[in-house]
Image 1 (cartoon, rainbow, N blue to C red):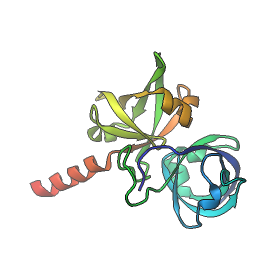
Image 2: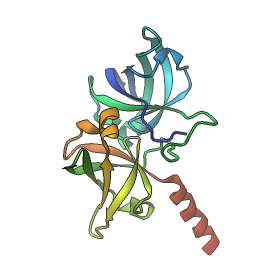
Image 3: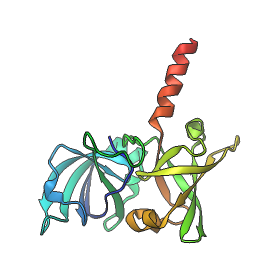
Length: 210
């Protein structure tokens, strides 16, 4: 379980692909890789992955860790597009008693979307993302959505019956400085996770009406 508050922007040091998936080695700067344990969960661009190995850095900061990404995850997220040197958002699983600064994020990516607009607004940036229409019912103005693992508030929803839904969010200076979203360009694919509470409510309503 995660909160969508990014702790570090890592860099992919290497990718080794095989028939069943890929092994990624990721360099950290703010996260102490040596404090990670094999078997624990970490969100990489919003996808929940399992740490398979660690290499500590110096002075209790930085280092490297490895994860194995299944073929299913490569196909359903943007991790299949990643290359050596790419920057990725990192968040460790939340601990019991942590502050929930964002919203409840599972790290289970629902779909990928595409950046369709980036417009400066003062010191912030208005980000518009095209989201598959099947997720539109889970997105509401002033609700939450995770984009590449970043918890963001929905400012506007533009439903388009003939295709994808356009979701507008605002990237404040802190988000631009502390996540990899600042490096996105129009056309870039991003991982999308809708609010889990909306999905549960839909399921409960289905059975209540049956």
